[in-house]
Image (cartoon, rainbow, N blue to C red; front, side):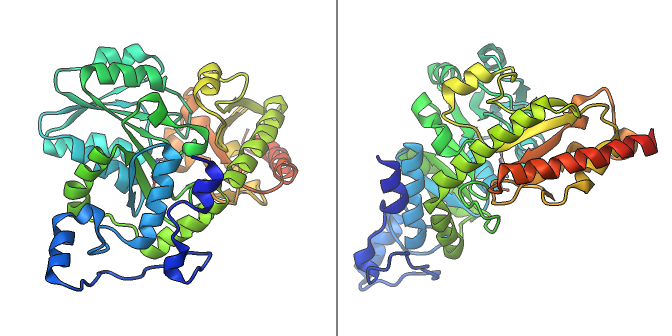
Length: 394
Ligand SMILES: *Cc1c(COP(=O)(O)O)cnc(C)c1O
């Protein structure tokens, strides 16, 4: 299906709403029926009906069709956050005694799902680096039900060979899930490589304006229906119609925003790689990145998140550098119009900072829609100011 068709037309039945170009927000909790027989039909198959907005809603259904098509999947479920999509999917697939294999260092709340929530229900997880398919092969047990992937992750960007992992899992009857927030379906289509379920935090690039929380899960109609009819309806993580409408608006410019963020990130990371204040730049499309060959093989482009380490990275220097930025904001999240930094030391108290641990030194950077030269000037003046932090603190 043509990307332009998906973003501009698919799912939009304008004749049903006065030919309005922008679809209406169906801000309603419930839907009425002409007859009891009609109601009975809807109650018997809520997945395909509009009965109650915890299930389906017409504004969400437009978005549902577009997001499923973008992933090349049969169907999609929409959620009130990305982590709701991830947690609901995983909970739906496991029961007491089951085992999961997850990549090391996934998104923080995904990590807590496997380390804190699922153990309460007797589900165990093995974490593997995942940079080699044998990591997964060696961790498989008789009880393994799910392999959970995040390629790349959003801090150190390790990748998994999606096709190889999917083939391994299929041979063993194990279901694969990936968090594809970093690439979006425009830059990576895991379903085409054999991955069963694809989750995204739509809060990030799909929204693109830092004003909505949302998640999406896509997969086969059978799997999506199964998750909808049980865990989804029971846990109640439905997206609001207004948020769905904002995401539809975000989708209109997804291709332009993503391409711009990608291009600017290439310019900024090239500049940083050559800068004498910078020790390391981690970005999957950098020529020096350890898995750049795999990145180019399975990704059609690269997200605007990367991490840097400064030379002589003291706690004070990292803090001074971030505090000195005039235009780039200090904040969590990413995928919006605004460029951001998130230093690892934001979650490490000074007395626990380990100069030998590279993970402590990283500053995550997100490149938004500003002119790259504008951002480079901001970074340059912050490097200058951070130099004096070194002089002051030694
Ligand atoms: C933000 C994020 C999530 C969680 O999404 P929310 O919408 O914040 O719940 C999951 N995975 C990745 C990679 C993220 O960046």
